[in-house]
Length: 390
Image 1 (tube, rainbow, N blue to C red):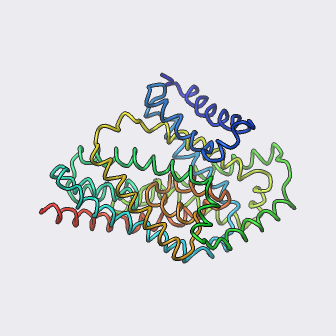
Image 2: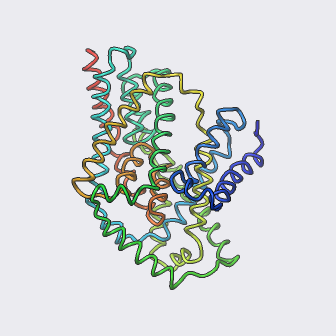
Image 3: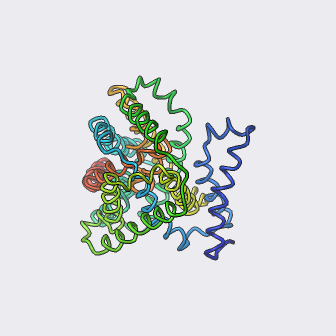
């Protein structure tokens, strides 16, 4: 097993670099279009952990998620066009609320169908799982404490979130290759996205230049420096009901600082490679997220895994219907969905796969779920308990 720090870093880096080398081969171009490298960046470390090559828990993974993820967001958000993002407002808000509501309603409907085959305290698992899927792990812990969930209950919820949530994220990334086709079927209004991408393209055509050593040094110092400062300050700020954690504060503070910097001359770093560098850092984080998963947990909670799949099928159907009605593009659908199911750690990654310049949309949406996730989850838990005859 690969356990020492340097070897783990080399392995994750080799996975990312090796896959992009393969993606350049003409014979594999079409395959990687529909199954993009980022999907394999997630899957290969997962398989390596499942078969015992890499550990499920390692300090490198924590460092990448706690600091490198934040640094990546800082670099990506330097290219924020806040005015254009705010133009996405109403459709983005509608899709976010639809995502949360459809997950909650899907959970209640699924429990009603499966309740005769579920254990007596299954309603606690559903409530805890909804805490993760409409907010985050802080919401889950708040709900679990409220309903008196046992460690076994939490384990079932975590396994379902890891396996089914992991699969959902992989599916969303895979669908990125079909984005234009799906938007056509949805009759999506891509005006704002196309306008933003066109103007960004024109700006890059005029201002792009090769990066110097000084540029790269400034990028890394800025990204990691903001991440460290935000982490230190976030660790001192108060938690709220187990929902708002130090990591939540860290991401909010760092993102706010990056958006503010995007209004200054520092935004010009995007023309010397800040976005590609930030994306590379995100891919390393993504590989670490994959390495945390272990498919050997698949058989531990089969009925809850089935329930998770049913909930997401209901969610997907509702999202497609509403997206069609309001002509929302696929980008907003997947970003709102992953903002609920994956939260701050993965929603910007998925958003950047669809629109490389717009991870900020996910950063703006995730706090909504954190704000109301606990209340939605408690309602789901109460409804499921009532259905169970409790």
